[in-house]
Image 1 (cartoon, rainbow, N blue to C red):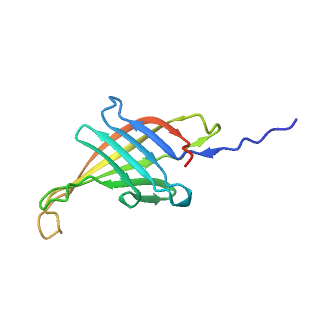
Image 2: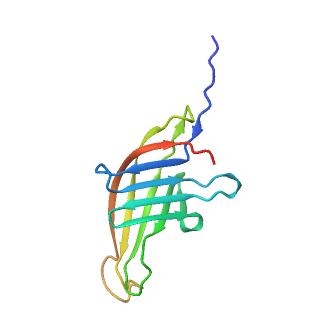
Image 3: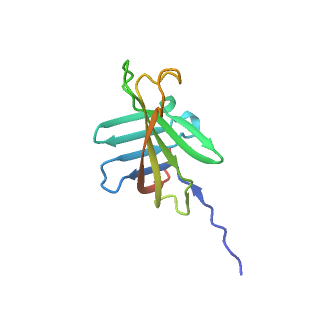
Length: 140
């Protein structure tokens, strides 16, 4: 009896949202030939598309995360960043989506947090949101 080997393909596009579908994120990894990564967020208070160098990609012990700056860049404003954990998802059929669960972390740093000599206490606060959706393969 011969077993046919199944060639799995890694997903490169993630469409996820919170349970109420109020916070929606779509992320597509960078592709071959210099095609930039794209992260689209649709939150009640912010709708934005980030591309290429606007997205910071991090890998910690083979776990992927992308981060974007949501700050308004105004003097005295809080620094606000959004990080999305990117799960590794393999597809048996490149035309079929696979379900995913992940998290995003919204980090807010107090305004004026320049260094430890300016105030005592924690500078950052975190809001963690569970996201569900699907991973697919987008041919670029």
